[in-house]
View 1 (spheres, rainbow, N blue to C red):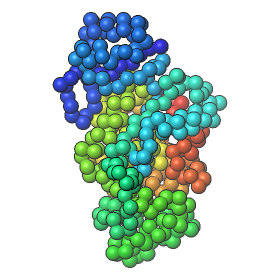
View 2: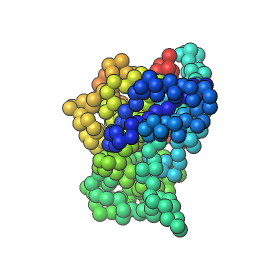
View 3: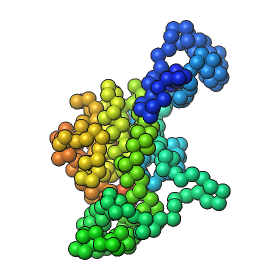
View 4: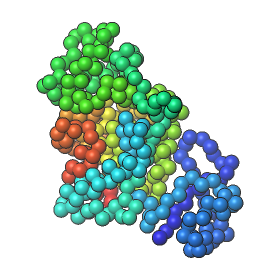
Length: 351
């Protein structure tokens, strides 16, 4: 079993940018190999530290994961292992659905399979003795500007796809003082948002807003994706806000070898998101990789977050778009992953 160790020189670059993979001197590489054979890699931390290296990432397996997953909003109470346990089987099912046409099944993931680039903890409020969880937000906490604009956009698109949601009136679209309250009340009746508590919905709004306006958090989230990507990574799958994080991370990682980007339920096409991307669109968004990168955007017709289904006007004709049907779970990541078309897009990067 091969051991994989990613390290950084102590006293090296401590910025929030992508960690640089260390280059080992021959003597260090020889010692590392000997220790692996003698001890199976279990007691490597102390020798490595003695050599002046700072352990950044350590994993066991037949190889690094070929697929990196990037989650969306509202996952601050979860973690990479829990998310991997949810995404992994769903991804395997999607590959299995597409295997007849692609010839690539779940076995193509290899022993390492899928790894998750987790950034949700960056949004988790600090723990206290009495309670930990989402702040008790109400409609009054929705801030004018971006947060209200996004909330009203969700309402408008929910009304277009769900007969049970009354469309916003003219006074609401004029940003009346009670617009946020009216929007949250209307969205509580939608199939899409009915299972989401009001305070969680407002917290999701604030996560999107904070990612786009907090430079330090934005770079730290992108760095989580960048450090998860190794030379073995062939496919990046990104859901919801994670598609924005992954897109920007790939744009800021020149020379990466990712062959396929699969975005699920992505808000990248919404003007209020698109105009705030880094790098700044001019007028099209930058392509997130080499010319040969295959980018497939998967959207459900009723997914309010993925309000703009066709991303080609924003990013160019090289992007492929598909529409799927997730039923009442329009924005659910696992519902997207089990679809045959998602499986085919992932298989294209693994083939």
